[in-house]
Amino acid sequence: MQVLNKYKFIAFAIIAMVFVISSSNKIMAQEKTQMVRIAKIKVDPLQLEKYNTALKEQMTTAVKLEPGVITYYAVSDQKDPSVITILEIYASKEAYNTHIETAHFKKYKETVKDMVKSLELVDVDLLGFATKPN
Image (cartoon, rainbow, N blue to C red; front, side):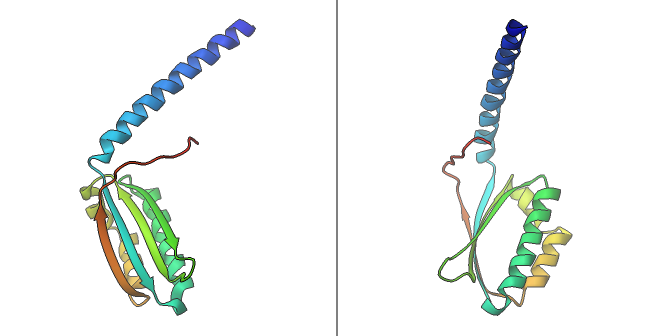
């Protein structure tokens, strides 16, 4: 029985390695077509809690419903929490264009229009990334 378990483990390890290698190749190929953007936002400090709620709702909905929305990372400045920076990664420019036409994105924009004091959008190129495995 131990021999069978050993072979199951080896088979599982080989399948896992193939998956990791193929995933890495897909990720590298996707990097070339992805749209990566940094949004720098200054929010009215008196409306910060409402803004953060609207932002989190929009991000969660977009990632859940839109296959082309890969990730969002939103952070606030420790010295001034009303200064927010968002890293957005989309599968492609087309995915981004689809995203900004969705009902949830339009709802977010309408909700926060009087909360945002300034907005700067910076399109960037992804040079690389490093993450720990799950």
